[in-house]
Image (tube, rainbow, N blue to C red):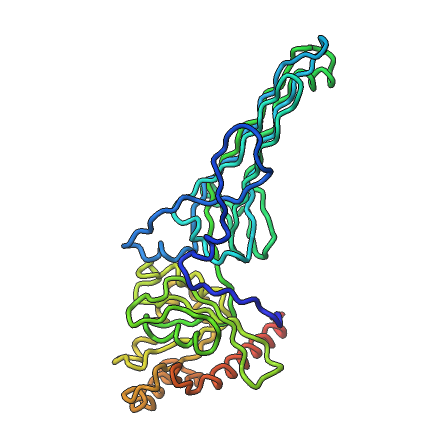
Length: 387
C-alpha cells in the first residue's frame, strides 16, 4: 500500500462536484473555444428511491459535433472554396476535484460543437470538444451492448468516447488534390451518438458496516479528520465518507483509508434502503469493521442479519475478514451489559476479533486503530506469500 494517501471527504450530496463544473452552451455554429467543461441539467432525485441519492451511478447521452460543410468558391477563376471545420469530440476525464457522480444525476445529455462551414476562400473553424469530468475509479460501459469502454482510475486520465465528424472539403482543396472537377466537393462527416452507463466504486482499506445509527460516522470522526453528518435517525449518511487513520505513537505505521458506508438493513441485497449502492462500495474494502449498536436489544441477531445480507449479495464479500465492534460503551446501560454482549458476539462471529469502544469518550479507539493496522499488515503478508 502506498505510504501517502490523499484524503477526499465525501460530506455533501455532490456539492464538491458542482465546484468543478463551468457553464457550457449547446452545439451551434460559428467560432468557439477549443474545449469546454460540461455540466448536466439538475434533476430532482426520487424521494422514494434512497439509492438515487447515493450518486455513484449515472446515465450519459453524448453526441459529437458534425463536420462543417465545404463550399464552392473562386479566386481569379481558380477553385478556392474553403473546407468545413471538423466537429468537436467528447472526452471523459478523471479529476480529483470530484468524488461522486452527483453532477450527472439522472440522465445527462452532452453535445460537442459543430464544425463551422467554409466560405468562398477560407476554411471553417473546428467545433469545440466537450470534456466531461468524472471522479476516480469510474467504470464506463455501453448501455446498448454492456461492453466495457474503459475505466478512469487516476486524475488526468482521459477517454475519447465520441469522435467529431470530419469537415467537408471545398472545391479549393478538391482541386488541389485531383485537378479533375473544379466544382467538386466532399460532404462532411456526421455525428456520433452513444448512450453510456457510469458507475464509480470507492477503494479503501477499511469499510465500516452495520445497521443505521450503529455509530459508524461518529467513529470515523473520532479517528480521522473526516466530518460526516451525525444525527439520531436512520440513513443520516447518504454518501460514503472517507478519512485517513494513523495509529498514534506508531511512527512507522502506514496510514489507513477508512470508508463509512450508509447503514445496511435487511433486504439490502435486493435493493432495499441504500442496499445495492452500499454493497457495491463494500466489495473493494480489504477489511470490514462491523459495528454493533450497544443499545440494541438483539446485538447478536443484528450481527447475523448484516452478514446474511453480505452472503446473499456476494459469497466472496461475506468471506472478507471482520473486526466486530460494540459501540456506545460510554452509556451506563451499555457498559453494564457489555461483558455479556461481547461473549455473545464472540460466539456468533466464531473469532476473537471483538472489541468494545466509545467514540465519544475515546475508550479503546487507539487499541482499535493499532489492531486494525496490524491485521492489514498480516493480510499484506498473506497476499505476498500467495502471489
